[in-house]
Length: 221
Ligand SMILES: *Cc1c(COP(=O)(O)O)cnc(C)c1O
Image 1: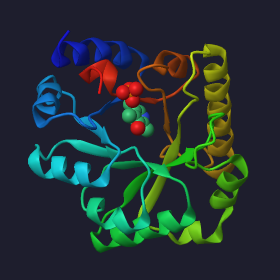
Image 2: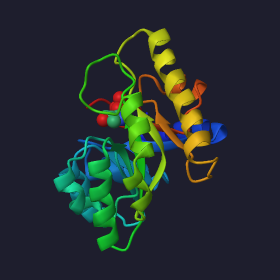
Image 3: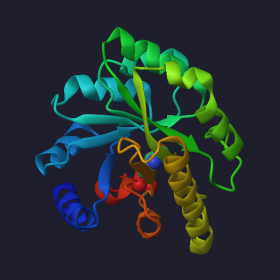
Image 4: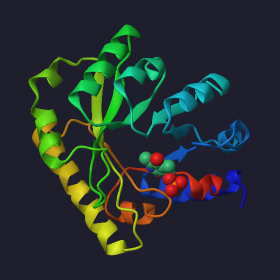
């Protein structure tokens, strides 16, 4: 199947389930992205700031660009004018910088807090204690140009579906708990970004609201 057919098939499935599709276009060409755009996909995710900026400049301005990869504070300024959602916030320091740059552009930037749920010892994402600390931090209340929209997580890269399911289940329960204790069921805390090509069906079963699919749509990298 080509990119347009793939987008149509997956969107039909996801729309029925009320799950939002982020088409992960990292390493993919402008032509590939335009094929998805012509099939009415408007949300695209990139994991490298420079690539994101280049594609933003080259492509139609009604695309909503999501940053899904690790973000260094000194690179926030390049994406602050246009980024629609940052999935990978993992410190109050980063959040403060996003707030500062958003303020310069007179914007409010939507952010997800990335939670470390995988067994693998990657350095990215907050553990539970750090997450709660960040949410309780008095500084957070002062940040008027960022809005925390929800959580993001990446499951362990394993063929063991039971393990993946457990990790997603845990993230969903954390999401529900945080929503009720910190956001008082505020409707703007409404995004649970979990699931990639290999595990999105499990993520949907466990209650995600957003999936990030690359190779399923565009083929292998
Ligand atoms: C690359 C990437 C994806 C998409 O991966 P696929 O396996 O191609 O679907 C999703 N989330 C993040 C954070 C990524 O870096």
